[in-house]
Image (cartoon, rainbow, N blue to C red):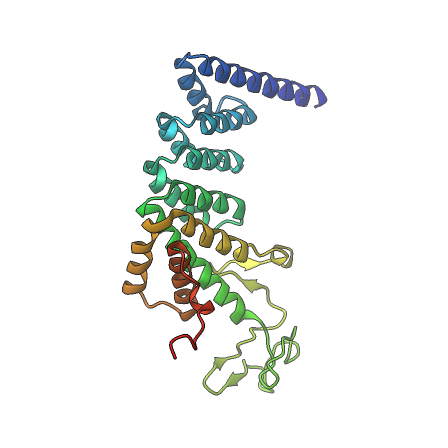
Length: 278
């Protein structure tokens, strides 16, 4: 087992060295080396670390000819996602908006996974690439994270009378003397859920307690907010279109208007002095 691990490490090191050599030759004017580096990214028979190194180098080179290869790398079904993250960073560095749809599809596929780092790399890439389509995807992403935030807040167990957060305000199952779910006026079934049962994600799958230790939603939402600002003026029509064609929660509307204000260099809406007009 030790010999196998050592051999794999040597192969990976040798592969990275070759990629570095190809990069050096490219910088010396050998344009064909670019295609060799691109081939390494696309071939699964190369060591994974070598392919990651090749993807990072393509980002450093910044040649749009590498976009199709990097976009294809986002479509692989490998469990490891670090190559995809490197490909996303490379695409963001290259800045060719033709990769935007592929990144959007990647985000669609990653919603049902716990890989927040992959989604955050995708959001950052869209912000760096810019363009109308990137802005549209980022607005949708911000809406999605806002929904997650609202649902998370609604799941917090609070006392009906005190409003204080409680672990289990009504005992084992929050049930009445009949054993059925407790009902409240204008609320419906017990808003606190059934005690002792596992919490369920928005996709209907059980969430284990150890999976609830870290919730990346706030971080992802902040990153998406910043990415929209980075897109700049091009993002404003996408924001206006979203507000005009959807029922927008007040919290979401406020955030979108704050983004527009920041892009235009105005004070954020909540920072405007309400007495200034009097």
